[in-house]
Image (cartoon, rainbow, N blue to C red; front, side):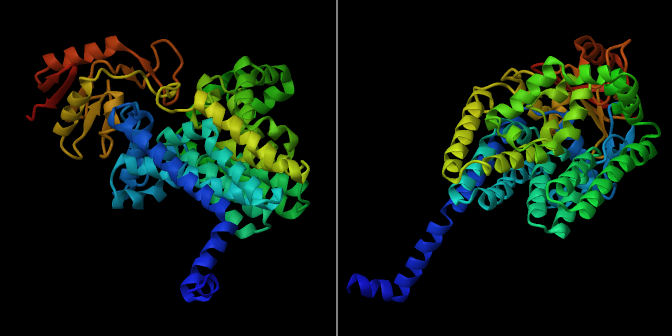
Length: 500
C-alpha cells in the first residue's frame, strides 16, 4: 500500500487528524502536563511533611476539624486555643471550607484537603494560559507564561502550606479575571462569590477588580457594582458576622494597634497622622516583601499597573500589620496578590512588540525557575516558615504508636504537631488545656502552645514555645489520680483519664 493510500485510509485519516490536533494544541497539552506533574510533586511533598509530623494542629488541624464537623452536621465548628467550642466564623469568614465536606465524606483524610488545595492552585495555570493566548498573540508565549506561573517560587510555598481557605482564592481570582476580560459577568460573579467565601478581606480585592473593570475597560455601571459588592462583603464580615459569632470585635485588630487598631482607626490615622501609615508601609520587611514578589516576574508587573492595583488592598492589609509573618512571601497571605501580579505580567508582555513577546515570556519563566531553585520549598532548600525543626527520627514511630492508641472521636488534648493527626473529632484541645479531654498525647520536644507569653498582649491564634509549661503539665498529669500513663517512649507520652 502506498503512502497516499495509507493517508486516505480510515486509520490514516484518524492519525492525521490526531497529529494536526496535537500540533495545534501542543502548548495547551504542555501546560496540562506541567500542571499534573507540578501537582503530583507538591502532593508527594506535602504528604511527606504530614507523615513526618512537620504539619501541625495550627493550621492544618484547625481546618480538618472544621471540615470534619461540617460533614457531621455541625457547620464549621472547631475547638479554639482557649478550649472553647466555637464556629470558625468567629475568627475568619471562610465558609468555602464547607464545600470540602463532600470530599471528606468520600476520602476522610487530612491529605484529601491538602490534595484539593494543591490541585486548585495548579489549575490557576489555565486562566493564565488563556489570558496569554488572547493578549500575547501566540500559544507559545501563553504557554511560557503559564509555566512561569507554576515555576513561581511563592506559589509552591502557599500550595504546600496545608491548608488555608484563602489559598483557594488564587485560582478563583485568575478565573474571575479571565471572565471579566471575556466580558462574561455571570461566570465572573460565581467565581467572585467563591473567592469572597475564602476570607473576609477578599471582598476588598473584588472591589479592586471592579475599579479596574470600570477605569481600564470603561464599564462604569458594572465596575461600580462589583466595587460596591466587594466592599459590602468585607464590611459585612468584619462588622457583622465576626462580632456576631465571636461576641466581640475581630481578634485580629490586635495586629493594627500601631495604626488605629480597627478599620475606622486606620482611616482616622490616615487623616490625622498620615506619616504613621507611611512609616508602617515602608519598613524594610515591607519593601523586601514587595521586591521578593516582583523580582521572579522580572518586574513586569510595573509595566501594567492597572490590574496590579487590585492587589493594593491585600498589600496594604499586610503592610500595615505589626505581625511580621504577614510579609513573609512563603506564607499563604500572598493569595490576594499573586493573581493580579500574574495578570499584570501578561498585560505587560502584551505591550511589547509581537516578535519579542515569546523571548520576554521565556525570560520570565527562566527567572522564576531560578528563584524557585534557590528559594522554593524543595528538599534541600529553605525550610518552610511553619516547619519548626526536624523531629528526632526515633520520635516518628513513637508518635504514630501514641496516636493509634487514642480511640476515634474521643475528646483528646495534644501538643501541636501530633494535633494534625488527631483533629478528626468534635473535641480537640491544645495543651495546656486538658480539662475536658479523655486522652492526652504529649511530645516533650514539641513545646509550642497557642497562648501568649505572660504579661504580653494576646496574639490571635498564635502562641509561643514554652518547654517549662509542657514539663509542668507532664508532672501534673503523672501525679494526678485522675490520669494514668499508658505510654512512654522516646519522650512521647500518652495519658488516659481514669473513669470514676
